[in-house]
Length: 624
Image 1 (spheres, rainbow, N blue to C red):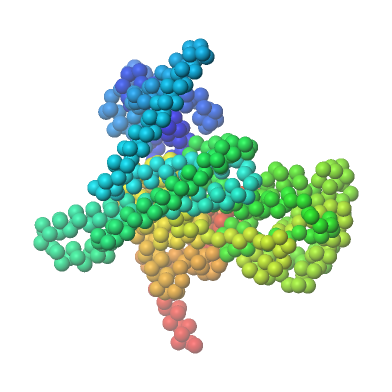
Image 2 (image 1 turned 90 degrees about the horizontal axis):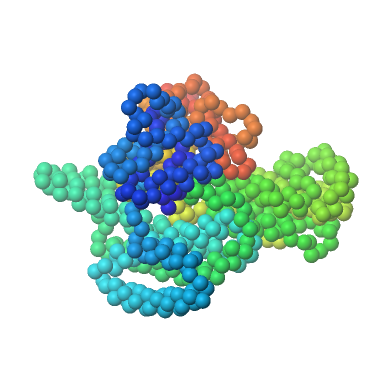
């Protein structure tokens, strides 16, 4: 654990924009392994690739001023026996302690077994089995005795933390493997949903308790200052203490989540064993936030469904077309899902060609070009008989596909693929394309509130433990609730703001900005701003965080461009901070996606003066 903490610190981006280097103290008693820990970290391939140079110093090297370092990208690790150096840390501290008695016994026993003969190991194994059985019996009795009502809340909360950690380990292991079994995928999907619900309920329970504590402290201070009336008015706008019934309901919900998740963990024992038989897709990451930032979130089951459809042998004649519609609302990730599937090595090896079309291409002129291209592919597929001229067509439809256009496409594909198999994937927001499917359809939905909070929290805190910053986590949870679960792009934009400014005052300022923006937008337009952005309709983002209150930031268009195309030099952060105010309409870079197809999300914006806009509206009304 300590190794991964240090590696995460070294590979994480700099949070603050000053020139001071990031510092991580490692403290512990003598001979505890501080230097050994640093040596293992420095040998890691990721660290060697990240840093141009690694310099080792002692405190004797600072007696003169000959040692100079460039501060850009420099990170410092200090090892010491003194706890005073913890004050120098900019991102926490790593504390090393001697092994526990249990861990020391495991270490001692392992080395002992390597030295004794095999005949003696049989007796040792027998004693271990007996000891384990006795230990389980004692644990069972202790667990029964510890279920007293006075400690039930603490027990449920602590046990749920352990069960959630176990579930996260199983899911993370599964995410790194090419699981193809449908039953295992469904079981993993259920386990993932239960983990998200458990994490959400536990965090909500903890932060509500924190709110109640802050309320009680604030109320006591107001009573002492004889301002009870003002206290009741102001505090009621922020948090209200949960009554006894509400607290009991929360505890009951925690208990239900714990029982459900524990049952799933027990049922997953066999699945964990079978997971090891599946090949790994990529190297294990060093932090969950990097895993989520570089892969599709909560789409493992849908991905495998599409891959299974594409690799499945056609049970009918080769001339028959197989069609799989993928439907879902805007910005839900349909094209991202298709891009990941098409990038899979199994799919690239299976098909001779992959053709991307839109509904605007379903005209005779474009389809004739498609036919000529397929004929050329037919001539070349003999060089690779394993692919057998198979063709994959990806059709992006903005809405429904007319019957005439669909018939033209199918006719053209039958003419140009006489020897191989053709499969079609249609992506659309309209449910009407479902009827075109020959083998069912895949429906994509926005993540649940619990899954969205897990995603948001992981990205906002990065490698930092949220439990060490309960006030920050409470603010982040309220932000995630308000922006709702329909925008993963918005989550990436806001969490990048929070990560770059790890300060409670700044996070509260972001919370106030988001709350004011959403409340004003709903009051004025009757819709959530994220819903309008997903539909690519003009959206008012209200006043900027650091700009003048008399200004409104309008977004008129949202579009994506590939990573190879030029992007604006202005970012959405520059506009929100108020550091730039370009005239007229201008484009800003909202977000760079780090997953396929590596889109850059561009907003077309304009900063409008509220007074001028009100005058213009009055003139238009008077003229009308």
